[in-house]
Amino acid sequence: MAKYLAQIIVMGVQVVGRAFARALRQEFAAGQQLTLGDVLLQETQQILNVSKLSTEEIQKNYEHVFEANDKSVGGCFYLQSKVVRARERLQEELRIQAREDREEQMPKT
Image (cartoon, rainbow, N blue to C red; front, side, top):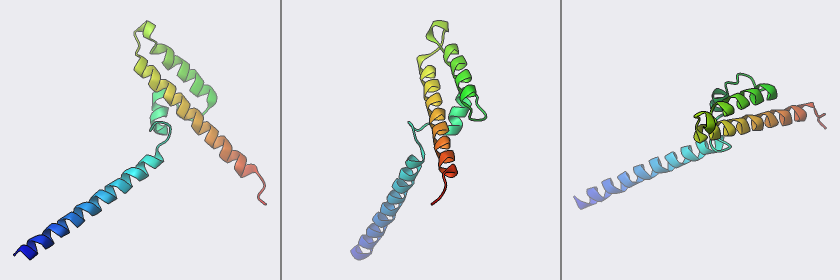
């Protein structure tokens, strides 16, 4: 009887261990996909109301939303911070796209 109980305990520990390891791998993979403070591109586009990535549209919407959330007009520092992070994330995405475009245009040797 004790032998079977020990086998059940060992099997249970193995199952829990595998599940824990799988969960850690999934969390690590998800964490690798996020960049710049875990701000997603889609989320930043929604914050600044930007449909396509253009420097002018990003800057114009950034200035409007940042000023609308200024503390002197009843805004909130937290929201201003989100707006700043959104602009930084979109600017980083523009840099990535520009780098990829340059790499595509370079002749392959």
